[in-house]
Length: 122
Image 1 (tube, rainbow, N blue to C red):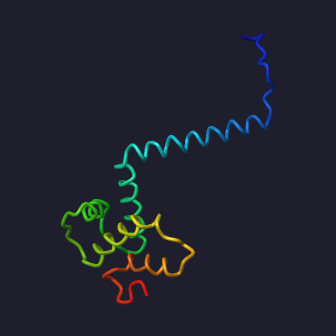
Image 2: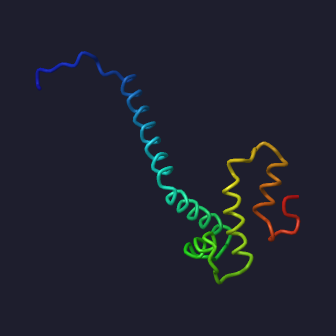
Image 3: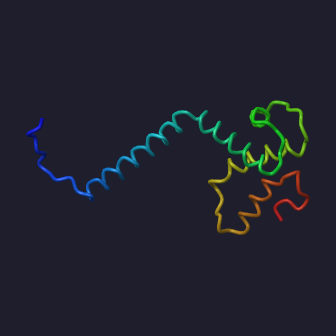
């Protein structure tokens, strides 16, 4: 092996392209795993909802958030339980909205604040 010389020269450009291809292969692998394992996507969504609501002072635990989303009865403040339901419904619709449309953002706001804020979606 000491005497082997490849028929090409490794340049910065080649290294950059190899790194780019490797990154894209990694993304495809992760996306493929998410598509093949929808429970991972759901678990990530539940964790994201829990974290987002925790910032807003929602006191429900991760397991309570999971139970609310799975349709189980949970002991807790009705407002906090509704926040979980609303956040989950909003995540379900997020790919459908146009973030540059005021009307769409109002509709999205309505989903997030349903049964919580009187002027929901206004």
